[in-house]
Image 1 (cartoon, one colour):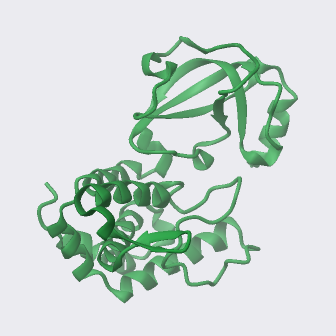
Image 2: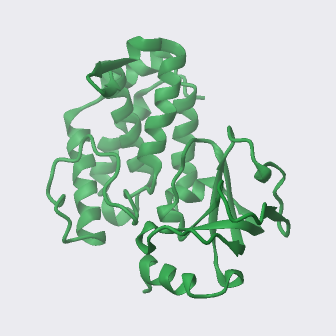
Length: 258
């Protein structure tokens, strides 16, 4: 199987018309992609930023904010200034839209289930937060950490992070798949941070020097939502039936998700 790095090196030596990949456009960003449709050409053709980022694969696509739209594109004009080959993306000044894909594809084969949890997180109430926090368990933290390590053993067995406690992990690695669910953990964190700010303001966070993190109740609620994403989204080879039940327990116990 061709690695993303090998693929990108080959593409960079090819003509622009041979380069294809994926572009994710956040819904809160104003750009030419607002009018995108299959067959259309989008871009300035000027060899200057802002560039159009074309990602090598869905697994390495960076999701700046959620929700958004996902496009398969073909590069028409490549920028002269390119990142290092291991970056996992190409800079373009113009692309042709091939087709739109479900944005949930960014989170793997079971991405729609993950996207449904993101939708709940974006509208979470304080009562639901309290329920998720109360139902959070150490057993689910352990199960989540085990999934991370099983995934690492398969995807990057030489990683220095193999065997660690990953209960608070959002991403591992660079230029490669960052989690068993792609960018889903970091997207969930962003979505819940926005919602926490909306309904709880500064009380939702603790600031320590330059760090900012969830206050205890929000932290536990986030963990319960992340565990639900793992339960519903990761490949069956990474989680046992018993672990899946533990991971989904808090989310299933929360009322008012309809």
